[in-house]
Image (cartoon, rainbow, N blue to C red; front, top):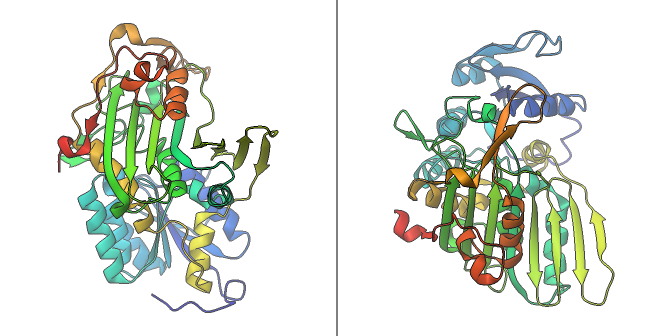
Length: 409
């Protein structure tokens, strides 16, 4: 790795960046690279896509080399950074291809579809001496530090656990947008594209960072319940409990999530204390502190862009916000989901089909009442199968959780 040079960020030439995967969510990265290019920090040197982007997709920009071969593209362009936003099962190979050429990496989440692939990738990155940032954008929020400081200062007393809740909706077109969408495996390779591991992965990763138990060695045990209303391989409505050996007093993170909401809402993380609670809406960088006998206090926070942080790491020695090792606990959850039994299909009377809401004729499957179940899971730190026993709304379709130790190695 090139040694950081203090003060170089504004004086050095723009760093050449290659983007692998510029459609779908990759469009967000394309726009972000352009935004940073406007500040002189980077220049877009190349795009790796199976189908070249047209002039309209590039907003008329010219002089950008395109290729289906990332390794060759990195060599021809002299790229210093690769932003990788490709199917999950390609992440490790592409990150290692960049590392072998001395190119630093911003890798979209989840880092890999299995813990073995994650270890293979991290070992290769380490051996190559390149920096890697994992794209959990919520961990760039300054609210994460604010919440941890409130907890450390005893603002809500002794912490008894952390809940995470996400109730989103995805239409049937979402599951047919790509061959790997909604798959656990594809052509013999793990994919693990489920609600816990991909669309609402930020809820889990953010809760683990707030807990302080985000490294692989921090995980003491995991239980998962995987369900699906859609006709897919993976889970679209699930919950998990992760017990950590460090962090909050009880070391417990419980997440309840769905992509089958009737009324989609903002996902959040809630820290429960014996004298109050802190709720963090991580997409909005908004925090609410509630304490008995006091008026609630809401604050909004800034956010550091993860690509900008990676650039500052390379040029000024700034600490990376999301290096791979700080996603190890999340990858333990990915492994638990990967090795768990196939998701339970919900009975036909547990869901219904309705218009997708985009005016394009799409349809979606919704699970009536799922928003209440998701919220109750985060509030009571309970899995779906435990809600009725804890005084919450019942989920009659729920089956007992599967401990990761029983789900596989």
